Length: 288
Image (cartoon, rainbow, N blue to C red; front, side, top):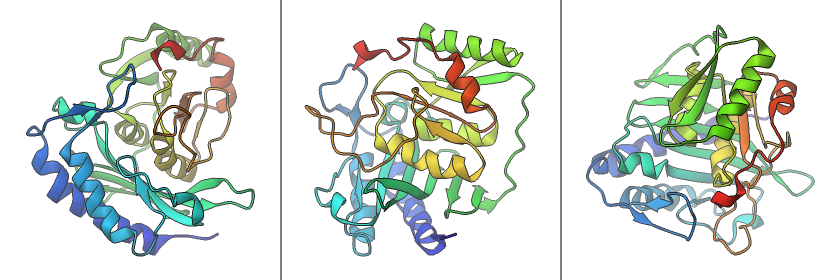
């Protein structure tokens, strides 16, 4: 098994440095502006931009194809190994003062024989809580306050389901209750933050499953989760039960690569049970 321990350790240091110098000092003291023409909150701040620049200025010396949400790289399809970053995943939460609602994420992407890219290592860091998860392609490591800590044991006494704290989504709730009924478990809806924050909640056992049926997720929302969840026997897949590939081209008419079929992620809940519980017309395409 190929591992990427050196590459991950270097990125861990860069992410911690960028969070300490460019992200955390701006928390609660930054202006968010709207970008794009989407129907959902799509914001950017100086924290997003400056942290992205800081990391890319260094990492592109070794991996020239590397890029971020704020700095897409037109040469990213020319390289076999590159870093994909979302330095402030959850800018809306960041701008609203939700200290555990946003995360800094990175995925190391490797070109596969069929030309697609796979997430072979990744990092999810919640700066507001100083919790970090990373995978080198073999082992998953959890650091709490900078100290390597045993990964919390999953307890499936009832089905804890993640939903963004600002979201009113009855279709998603119905899916969760259907899933709970099929598993014979009581359902509790747990407010979560953005994608990285939700991955942290899933790995911590604060939730057992999370789905998104609004097509506003993007390539970099799923790639960091993929390597981490697979490392613990879990998964992230589309709501059509399809595995993701990464480093996608931008969606036509927009400037970013969207995942129009949403996603579902879990460690404990079998994919076949999730697939059975997803109703027709699950995706809320009118929100795109």
